Picture 1 (cartoon, rainbow, N blue to C red):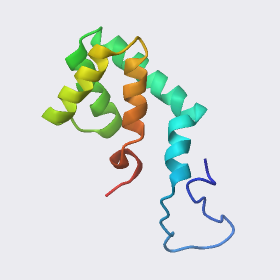
Picture 2 (cartoon, one colour; picture 1 turned 135 degrees about the vertical axis):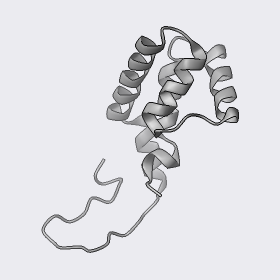
Picture 3 (spheres, rainbow, N blue to C red; picture 1 turned 90 degrees about the horizontal axis):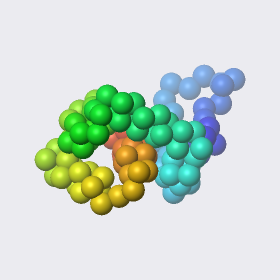
Picture 4 (cartoon, one colour; picture 1 turned 120 degrees about the vertical axis):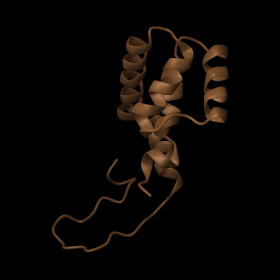
Length: 107
């Protein structure tokens, strides 16, 4: 993970780090065992807290991952995705949230 996200050199002082965005970062976040485990844990937490309520699950996942509620368009897309999917749909939706630009970068 450190290699994909430009780990700083720890034995040198650096007032500002360079910003690099490369394809392996996105691939790492999609395929990483760590990120998959985090998505599964978030899905379990959301499922437990929302007890199968799809709309509440979407809102809760956004709040926990992004600290904001979903927009109306995001809510509709997420609910359609969950309604059409399998038992792993919530895990995949949580993985998608972890791959959003606003999850990765602080503006």
